[in-house]
Length: 317
Length: 124
Image 1: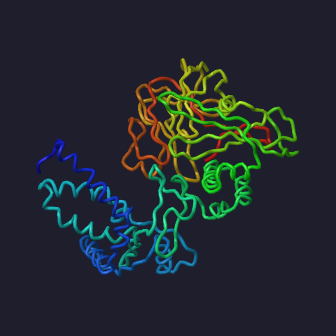
Image 2: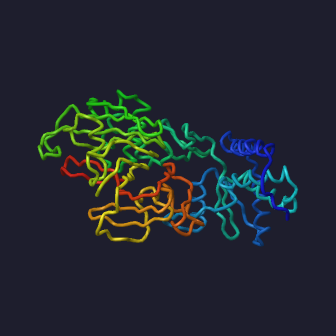
Image 3: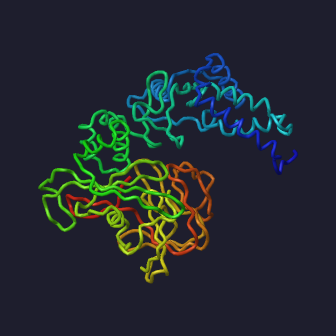
């Protein structure tokens, strides 16, 4: 077989077309809209035959959750257990399917594999995920709705970030999965406030803040925290990256809260950082004695780092 | 530790350049610098380096070459046999960080617990 060492500029210029074409199949819902039950069943039977396996019963369902429920029902499980989805022949394959389609269309060195490739394409067109078992294959259709942020991470503060035809969906905020209970708490500021105070996980707290900020604005965030802004500083880091850090304090003091000097009857205090990779906003619990956001940011570095070291990132991700 | 004014961060993992390798350190096997039980993600340094434990937590890194700090998932490690090569692996949340050769103190950002009046590493 001939080995291709380099692509010509003309060939390279075609690559984006293949990338966009395949991404559109999922993100413009082509696979969802064009789902064909007959083709889905026939292609999965062909796949089992290709692998030398007995022809399966192909069961089509609307979502990955429905796959799990169906398989547990078939196995007679009293307590549902998670069954692994197949590693291949699903939506994850579109990257390499796009890659090989480019070579099929522009070169002839892979022609002998075209039928096999077409079989995989037929399967993937109608299978978002599947659980492959002896004699039974349970296939989930593609999602009907996918919402993402500017980084293309799954993201929605108004509802599911990914949703299937049967109503099953999952919540994500800036690419991070959020449990439905937490998401529901953020429907109003009072419940969000309770959830924020009851959680110690900074990613969950960041999701709550992001949802509240997006839904209710900065005023909503301050209302949730019952807080005022104490200081705001913008720091210019190396390479042009600018970071805005804010200090907040609750308006009320609480007899059970201490500052770092051990003095009781203190307000809650937070320092706000924004992740440069995900744009998630983090409010980290801090000591209410700070009035300068940069000094406070220095204090939150690992304990062995002296305050004399500048607060300046050479790389921030 | 003698710190220089060069700092890098990837999420809550922060690295600070040192002028020299502190004495009396205990060298350990390469390992994740931080891992999240909730999400299954980790921060790990890939490349040619030695890693030492620091009393009270954190590590000192002696990077012999340009290394790569990755934030990724265990499932992305298929086919990556060791952390000895400076490779970029698919990210979980944070972009990869190029770590220039040198000595670094690395640990996790802290939060203040106003109920206990203590500083703790942030949890994600």
